[in-house]
Structures are given as C-alpha cells and as structure tokens.
Image (cartoon, rainbow, N blue to C red):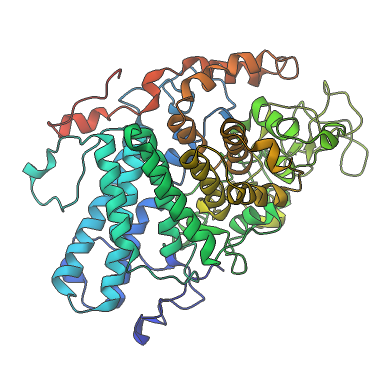
Length: 569
C-alpha cells in the first residue's frame, strides 16, 4: 500500500488521518468553495486533496492530457488508423473534447487552489499546519498555470478566486508573462516547503518544487529567448540544489522504477520518483473508483474476451508504440565501438520500454507456445514479434517501429489478477523523476556555459551507467554541439512515454521538423512493410506550425468573451 506521511509540524490530531497505512487519495477530496465545511485542520486536509485532485482526473494525467495530447512525438505514436478529429493524430480542432476537458480541468484545479487559499486566510490565520497546506495549494496553482501556458501559449492568468459572472471574462496573458509569474510563485513557495521526502511522491516538497522550477526555467528560455541565458542559469542552479541535497538517488534497476508504479508501491529507499499522479482503484467497486488508464491505452496490448482471471497480462488496448527513431536511439546512436560490434540489446531501457512481445495472440504469433508447441494464446502467453510470422525462434531485434510501449505494462506478476475487463488502473504516472533532474542539470549547464562541464557530463553519465551502457570519454563530448546532441538523445531514451518529449521538441524549436520526418523513417525497409508505419507517417505529415500550441477550446471562447483564438487556429 502506498504511504503518505505527515509533516513534522502536523498536529498529533492529524497523525491518524495521515498514518502510513494511507495514501493521499484515501483522503476524500472535498468541494473547495464550501467554507462552512472547514471546521478543523483535519477537514482542511480534505480540501487540499481537492486541489491535488485535478492531477488525477482522466482529463489530465489519467489519459487526455498525459497520453492523448502529450505522448505523440518523434519517439511515440498512436498505432491505429484514424482520419477523425482525434487529438492524438493531430487532426483535432478547437471543438475537440479532449482539448476542452484538459483545459477545463486544469482551470478547475486553479479555481480549487484559489478557493482553498482564501479559506486558509480567512479561517485559519494562525495555524502553522494550515499555512503549510496553503503553500502546497499555491504551488499547485502555479503548476497548473505552467501546464496551460506550456500547452496553449497565451492563457488567462487567474490568481484570484472567481466569485461573479463578470469575473468569468479574462483576457489571455502572453505565455512568457504567465511563465514568469509561475516561476515567481514557485520561488516564493520554497521558503515554507518541507525538506523531508517521506510524503513524496504523493505530495510536493522542497526538492519537488526545485525540480519543477528547473523545468519551468528551461521552457522560459524558449518563450523569452532574449533572456535565455539567465533562465538556463536558474534551471542549472535549481537542479543542482536537488542533486546536492542528497535526498534522491537513481534506483539501480530502471525497470523497478515503473514496477513500483504498477504494483502500487512507493520507493522509500531511493526516492527517484519525486512526484506522481496518483490513481486509487480499478472501478471494481464504488470504493475503488479511479480515473487513470495508464497501462490500458499506454501499455502492452492484451486481447481476449473471457476468463480474465487466467490472463498473464490484464486487458489493455496498447494504443501507443515506440518509433523507429526511438529504436535507433537505443540501438545505434551514442554507442561505443565495442557495443556497435555486437548484436545484443545492451540498454536496459530498450528492453523494458520496447520489449519484444505483447499479449495479442494475433498474426504476430510464432508457431509455438510457452511449452514449445502449439500457438500462443491471447492474453495468456507472451506473443513474440517474429520475422514474417514464420520464425521458430524469438529474435529480440525484430519488429522495430511497431512495438507497444512497455513502460507501464499490466502484467499480472506486477499488477495482480483482474477478474473482469477493467480498463481503469491503479498505475501511477510520473510527473518528476530524479533522472530528469540530472538531465536538466546537464542540459542547462551546457546551455549556460556554452560548453559542457565535467559535472554536467558526470550527471548525464549516471543515467547512462544505470542503463548498463558504455559512454565515451568526456573529451568526445567537450564541445557544445556534441554534448547538446547527447543530452537531447538521452532525454529521449530515458524519459520516453512520460509526457515530456513533445514539449522538449517545442522548446528546442524542432517539433514540426522532427514530426514531419516520420515519412522518412516509415519508408525504412525495417518498418515499411508494417501497417503501423503508414499510421505514423500520416500523423507526422499532419503536423504544422499551428500544432506548437493547442487551440483555445470553442466552448471557452463562447463563455469568456475577452479571449481570442490562437493564431493559425
């Protein structure tokens, strides 16, 4: 069971509520704007859970924002044919429901934060516990604004509670203005943030805030390019503070980071996972209600229509694959001569993220089963990818460009057996990991100094060492361009399928170009004979400059008369 620990300053009366047998979402989120509800600090914690609740919606990190809107990039693509307005194939418009609901729920989180902060100010002015809760809500309000500005560009900045119809109208502020406000708000939260990591990854602490601030400043360097160098310095310093804190380490086993999320466990030894979107149940009952589809749409495909208790991988659509470019990033890019001389998969992340099987039991199956005879059974046996459906052996190097995302697999050895077709899961989703902090530090140091430092190289090498791959000497990457390329590639290898790559490409100014390259990759003979190559090429061809931001939802334009549509939309 996931654990949520109390702050040092939390009163004894709250310790039962925050005991180690509880995870934070066991605290019932409460409607924020009912001030008569908040009669004590215990109920105030319910209100704070309501502020966090926007993260755990299906419309945000449960599916719409995290997967459909943010996980189709140069390394990950939607593996179904589609000519509709689906946002995951870049054929959406301002009327897209996914676009609207994600926007609305992030603003709902902002509304809840504003209301909650008002309650604390008005009803608990002398409570130290309440002030700590308020500080968390303030940070979350800034974080939601960051997600909106990063995704939609110029957006309304709502730093006060909306209490009248007239206040609904609010013009958009420039992206850079919103991001600077976000950074200032987060900086102000640091002084009162707890340094302990025992409440992570359920709630934010000092190191969480520092890590997210590094991310904000990296994006600000893109949005306000005239002051980019100063933002790179701030990103570098905040990431370095996390590193120097000694509170986080890389888990020696890359796959275990995600197995913990699948198994509904927190890593209390290494604390690599610094912040996660939490999902409580699988909708098997009213008390197990949840809104997360991690592992279902983003996982290994597992088919079958009955006898679910016999499955080795719980039912999953597996709608997202790793691209040929991702395969080559692992297989041949930034490798040493010794590694290139072998035909073995040497990067632990490649095997975990792009494993050579799923559980479909379809035409990919080999003419043998788990006992060496017969054919694979859907959802029961692993279905290996093979050459032309006739191989009698598993070859771990085939089916490049068409493998399901393996990072959040629903294999029952991790998730447990489900007795029905349960599409909602308890699998958490990473918002911030220590590996990301190390790579942000390496990137920011190179950008600020105009060349890599030994410390930047060492930080990046920690990530590669954990993956079990060799790294050329620092002298091979001692110039700015070589190290920049290495960092960008490493972010892809390490953080793929975690809703970060798309925004990395945007802030690097190469999003449209890289997406348009899908046609070239899909024509490669290693991939071209599979239908998914055509699906991926169509997605890449659809991407235009307008897709650097999402459109302002049509519904929102009808409600907020001061808003105008984003250019090109």
